[in-house]
Image: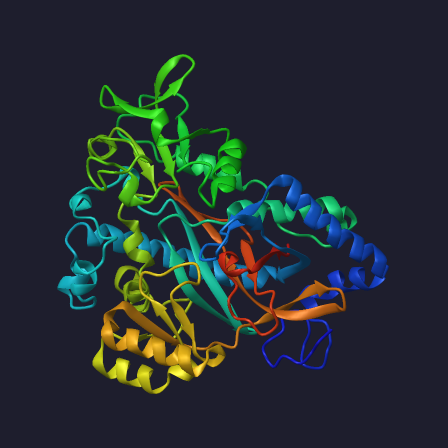
Length: 476
């Protein structure tokens, strides 16, 4: 074990002793012959390759699909830690849904002076044609991913919110299936909460969100994918198959008799709930991008008339904006009347003159992100950047300060990964997945742990070459 890191190590304390959450796992690990572990590590790679779990790494010369590296050392969270996280996640998700309803209705938070109106005017994700419309059941964010980071024994922070189309749940499920297949005896020794019923829970949650036009019986749920060339197509197909839902593309759908219907061998059949993995811009060429071939002409008219539920609701992407994120403590308090149980990372809004001055003076120590950016792109990590990169980013900041926020470089926790030389600490984050319906909020115990595979790297995104781990929540 490389104990050189000064960051909080989730498996070992500063004296190299195993933390209680990992005690039984480490006993098991130390009992295994080294050659057995090496062989199992190779088997894991082979398993993922056979399954076809890939991800496009955009921005490279050959942006081909490649395997997402999987690390076979689990990330373990105690039952009491999970209860605390769950309360904070539920509070935040409730606030997000109330916030989105308010933004598209009376905008009380703007009237109260708690959120600047300019954040809506300058936000492409805010959709004017959602104003005054309430989605079926009043639910905007049917599936949410809340990205968390840890910095100490009891210190968790929300890094960002994913309310538009959070991805990665298929990797959470495949990671668990792979681990259970390789190490069945390990799961008999360590009692871990199940995640395998997520597809059934997702199907049940979506089915509870039927539109006013639903006439009874079993709701028809479909997954709308951009197609096989999308980087997350594996996940779209996987979830549709696991839910027993139809996987459809825009060309399979048309508006017939005021309903969105899909082509089947028995003719066109109405869809009640559409879990779309197509961005707003491409959802309806009659409403948004007229050149889109990925969506369904007229679907927004059907939606507003109560003929279909779209999950997540169009316009939810405004909540993913990193400038909006910086106001989340105020948003949580405004809509819940409570202080946030999960704090934000300290954030400087570069649109503010004083904040911009501080950021420009301290670029070498800060992380700077585009407010609309995602996937680890368009950001500066000051401590690991060259002087030339910092100066180039300084020019971007000065030219468009409102396009950026800045945060301190967090001392992210580490968890060991398996390497040829043994266990070595690497930085990680966690994306729990949350289902929302009129019946309530359902948080899957665990989530997707993303891990930076390069020593010292803070970038965990799969699109930037990071890997994943199985996430265990221990049973009481």
